[in-house]
Image (cartoon, rainbow, N blue to C red; front, side):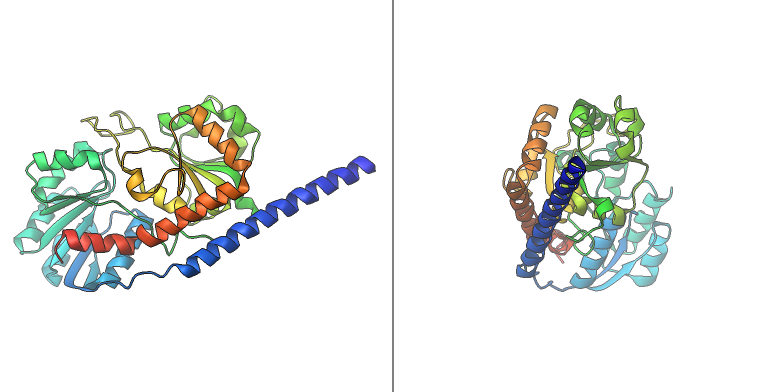
Length: 363
């Protein structure tokens, strides 16, 4: 009976320690958020028609921020943008991305809206992965906004005089610290499509991952050489946003590895522009109060201080080393995550970003 009692005692102690650490994290996040006072939105005297892309978290974050920031806001489907603009006569039509789900006559509709005297802006959220399509779109808009540094010169060289660098942000009403059930808890989490660079990175550290509680979600992960070894921890296919938020909250560390930019089956970046800017997931993970390990993009230091508010890696060996360090140093892990949470809620919400948008568009 003694070995059984020892095993029970060890399991109980592990459970207590884990629960204690989760409680510290949850309490610290709650206290921090109470101290952050959101800025009072500046109301601009404009009427805006917003056309969503279908990126749920981004669209809803922008819509809610615009409602607080403009005199009147209307939201319309891309199929009816010209019809709605004719009916509503807004001052501006703001289009998110203008790709994928947009109708074939999208650009003709934009022309019709501009003919009404309505100013138009497109805000790209997929750069530089779809430049084969975006280069056809930009000349038809009055203002071009992009979150990607590498595409700014491209669009200006196409004759677009009003091109602005406009990073994305987080929907703080959705992505935030929360207590979650045990089933959402993991040591290491990665959520995203299995682009080849991601496959290669996780394959390289698969022996390390196999010995820990991990959660991986997304399509095409059966591309991995070590898929069978990690299969029990992989959710194949799309994960609803609300579930992603819970898994981010339940993880000790979330890996953020940007997709490759090279043209090919996964991209339409025929000009092979580099990826210099961070993705929306950077803000979303940080907003959940979880430590994030991300590959380094050029503009990351503009938004987070590496080593203080976020952690970075450049190769598989460094990723594994930092995973191991932070899994074994709870206080350091929590401190970096809390500083990242504070920075996000202070500077990188859509409410803050829409104020930058208003300045760019002279509202």
